[in-house]
Image (cartoon, rainbow, N blue to C red):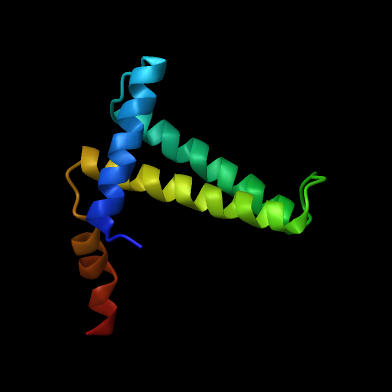
Length: 101
């Protein structure tokens, strides 16, 4: 498993390929819209896994779909953080780590 910087770099490279392929102009609105889209897809995958959404997929397929959506949302968060020049590790430690002091 990679560290956050490595994961962020992978997300950026994939996003660059995606943007070039589909001629997408990435800006602040795009980043926020993608976060919303991926969160919605994560919610749908979770509800299907828990039997609260329609699906004929097998449980292992539903679990894989949930994991994929977590990955998508996390990658989009990393992309947004890069866009806004946010050090995610530092921000988490500052915000969450304060409660451990």
